[in-house]
Image (cartoon, rainbow, N blue to C red; front, side, top):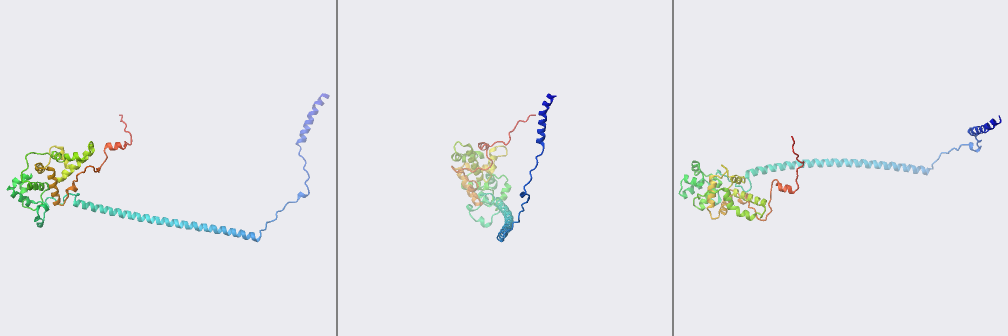
Length: 345
């Protein structure tokens, strides 16, 4: 029994200590002076402070009203600016439309006038046009030749109408006989041939010349002189300009030179052009005779040969038009936008 009581006593002491630790502590009695609560007295502002507060409030309200007034004024100004800009754009659009309409009208008038007057340098007086009697009294150097002038040449050379029609390359002798009795203007190439016969009264030689051959004989040395040595592109351009001058001297379009150079059946020159080329090649200086006679015929018909077919000058930059060549495009680094792939079926 004694051993059990010894072992239980320390455990009982521990349990009693824990119970004492868990028990709530007793509150200390409050002091008597701390029982009264502190009451805050209302803060009463002085008259000066109230006036200062009122002034600050009025100042803030005045600033707010001023800001609102400025904001409204700014909105009104922006609205007026928008309306003014809208009016300006509207007037600008109307002015642009009017200018475009006037430009279109002027272009139409210029096109109509150009169609009426023809290309620059092209004679205004065409074949089969009637000439007044007062104009017929002028010398041949101041007016174009007519059918009556051809009749005068026919009698001067002591030829009948059939023989002179063959000399001029006109195969319809009935129409030629009718032409001799009229005052209509004869064709351009026929007038050039008549003036050459009047200047050099001899028939055209039997030797036949191709138009390409005559062009090479007349303008070949000039092409070599004007074009840049070793530059094929410049030589082609100069050759094209001289071919235009050659066809303009004969009152033909620039595309006629390509047709003459094809040398296919039906692409050759007319008989009157063949006779004119033969007569020119029989002259001492064929190119000078061609350009001099063409200048006279252009002038009396209201045209200008130098304006219609200007000659290229050496050392002057060439003005080329149209699409660039493949070599020029390659030089600029042009390439296809998308790579082309072979199609596999």
